[in-house]
Length: 74
Image 1 (cartoon, rainbow, N blue to C red):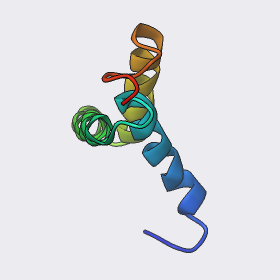
Image 2: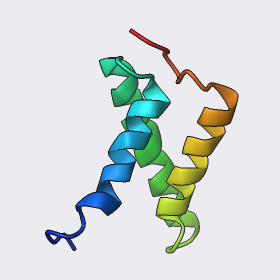
Image 3: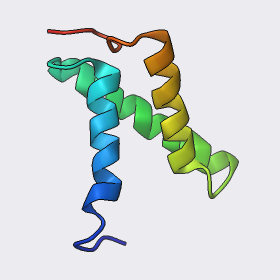
């Protein structure tokens, strides 16, 4: 469901996609969003309550391995 108060909860995924791809890199943001979406889809298939957690786990893994993002700065 979507309501006027669900913005901050969904905004975190946009922020994570930008950080995963690399700040200032449009194609990196697209790749980060796809990576988060795939992680959430796979997490949802493993366990119904896991999709958002799987996305956050992928975010933290990328952040630890590549702090500048997958594609770095543009």
